[in-house]
Image 1 (cartoon, helix red, strand yellow):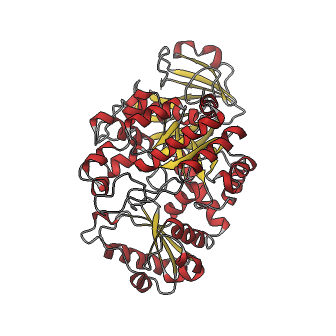
Image 2: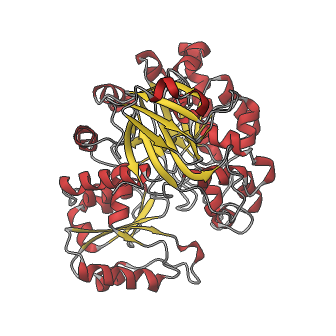
Image 3: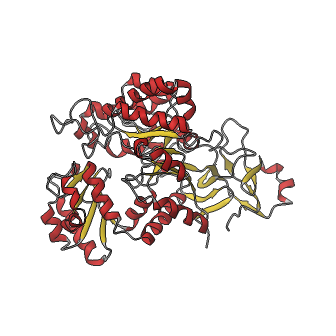
Length: 519
């Protein structure tokens, strides 16, 4: 059964998540709007005129999730490419690469997800070893955080400027500008059809886990601008989750004008103030625990941050930045303070600027973000995957700083709105897993309850995109929801180790974008 936006559909016999309102078991959708919400004993007026009646069988119905930070073509390419997440040592990576190369004839071999921090010998493969595994082939292997990677000699030949760029050290590893050049060279070998197929695959994977909207974080160093045209093509061919677009380019290079021309909500997202902990490119106030004397890299200073915020604010667009380390978050807050002198605090608040990640930040700066109306778009899975006293963050930062990262409770306590996402392809689409990760943060002081985490992964995503009334099930609201195989009212407790609900159906503006029971 496919829900059509032109039909009047009655859903009955469920457990509809409507916190703060009377318990509901049924609702009616007309076109893309919820026109009635109530209990089964009141369905008769709506059943008589319904085109379809759907029996929910006691299943839980919630607003569909929002993933507030994704890279669709990259996520889809990871689904179709070489997944190196299971490589437990350098030899595993090389063996997997060689095996994949024997059966893959694409112009470039794309791999994702390797993480050397858990290897017995953390040395990364050399260029000679990559060549031995894939003779003459162009190879790009993204580290799990996608802020550094490995490249083969054949790919270097296609990007000779790479060897003069910051972040090239003469080995197979690239970071910073060299990484951007390597990624550009690799993506130039990916066909338009491959990128479109990747976008379709990523959106399908998102819909299959109950995600009804994603925020696409496009940027010049991440993906071709043509990806946004491909999104238009895909949307014209099939029902898909709603895609809110961002373009991460600085105002000084025309980023604000380009964002507006591309129909983006803002010149924000992956406009990077720094890098990532795993690649040791996040900018820190004190050096990395496992590399004394090295404190990462800041890509934008406070004046450049302020310039971008001022132009975005005056243009009526959201601005924002990727910032992870405490030196980067400090520079961003200082940029807001400088921008306030030019446009005023009220205009900054009204613009609803947003920051991505914000993993390490001084407590007093959290209050400053609240004062400027900033939305924090965070990824709880990062703590679940790498946090704690013994994870990758502890290896890079030391246990104290690792436990201080991703302070969800501090953000909410200060009044900073949260929007949760995955940063796919960095971590997979798994919204219930994200809710659980926030509720069971490695540091108990940073935990928030399941309800607050769920709100951040639903209403928070809509709010971050400038929509105050999204992410709830209410009469007059958009019919964007998910049906789960959990029965009974209330959100699941999501205790660690327990299975998360499986998605049965995802509906976006009255149209089914995923149906597990469809023939």
